[in-house]
Image (cartoon, rainbow, N blue to C red; front, side, top):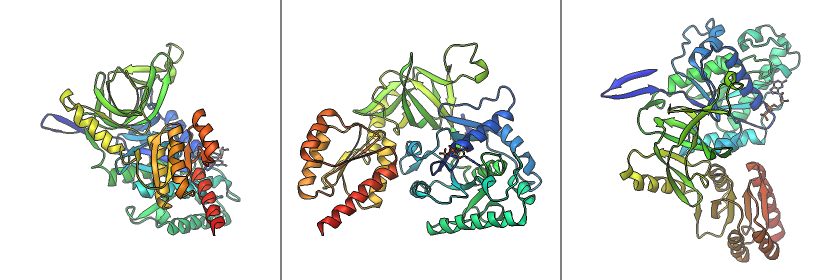
Amino acid sequence: MVLELSSDKKTWIRQPIIVVLGHVDHGKTTLLDKIRGTAVAKKEPGEITQHVGASVVPASVLNKITEPLKKYFPKLVIEIPGLLFIDTPGHELFSNLRRRGGSVADMAILVVDVVEGFQPQTIEALNILKEKRVPFIVAANKIDRLEGWKAFPDTPFLESVKRQSPRTISILEERIYQLVGKLYEHGFESERFDRVKDFRRTVAIVPISAKTGEGISELLALIAGLAQQFMKKKLVTSEDAARGVVLEVKEEQGLGTTIDVIIYDGVLSKNDLFVVVGKNGPIVTRVRSLLMPRPLQDMRMHEGRFVQVDLVTAATGVKISAPGLEDALAGSPFYVIPSEDRIQEFTRMVQEEVSQIRFKGESDGVVLKADTLGTLEALLEALRRENIPVKLADVGHVTRNDVLEAAIVSKSKPEYGVILAFNVKILPEAEELRARENIPVFKHNIIYQLLEEYLKWFKEFKERER
Ligand code: GDP
């Protein structure tokens, strides 16, 4: 994996970080399970594939999975060390992969049910990918549900389609064509993957069935191929201090509060000094232990779900236990501080980085509360798209003070004198005041529904006003 030795610093190409997005029930979880299942079936003992919050399909396994495609693509050689898939699909967690001006995800798979076509969350996912500039391919899933489809399990799509009736093939073509049309409406050129001439300009559509496994080898080959062709520079990493993002903050029995971090750059070791953003400002602490999931075959012999490791290299998903993480926020940047004299520089840097997301401004706008920095940012961006001014944006439950802020706005601009609460509670003393002041609160744990409910109310309000 070592690419070159420049002076005394090792550099290497890391695995690209892949996320799966799409509308509910379109098959994201089934697809990830299928990829993991296939990867586990094809792996040799000792090839570790399970990370914390992510799974890696190593190059050796990718080579085996894509072997049947050599017939079509003789030049297909896997050069990257593997693919790192974020285990939880959907854009709520995706939003926590935030990074200044973009995403930690290198590439996305947008899953679309080929029978149902585009749905609200497909469009929302597309908007987020556009905004974050994450390249993606479309997995046109559930081809086995097309009329007359005969399933050939775990077969490449190009093999399977040859054995379908002309009528079924034309139904498939029609469905793909519909997707091409929808993508065009949203500003993307697209084409079935085997007909794409320029992958930099055209989004590839791979017909798959997450259930039967048809098309999965093409999907994986394509992701690997695109990553090694267009992203090599971005994937070069070195022994430098680790950089990552906090995916989740979790209580673990016997460990206290831990953070699950995706490391996208550098090397992270036990005892490293690092900074993350907490509810009340930056948290500077040292890695007490680095934890990886215990391999399944070990489960019976040992206690506990995790094993300790001394060091991890990018790209990886790892659980970190350290003192003082109780208030850490998901979606926070994670930076190792190279030396103690640079603590100030790094705390200032993370503070500045999140000041765009957590703020109290002067505008008469809505009050926004969310459970993580990632969802807060996603909501802010969605509100900006709708030209809704935001007065206050923060992570945490709705407090009395939030209600007071909304109440002030409500006096002059009642349509903005509201609270949007994503995946957080209204504290009892806040509720009391809210009821008294009659401040509307919109609560939801799906971003687009929260927005939709408020916008619907907003429209009705404006109509009543006329
Ligand atoms: P998610 O909400 O996007 O994660 O969707 P799931 O993976 O939970 O899938 C929703 C439903 O669709 C489940 O009942 C799956 O078994 C089914 N499903 C997923 N992929 C396929 C597929 O390729 N073919 C068929 N026939 N069903 C599928």
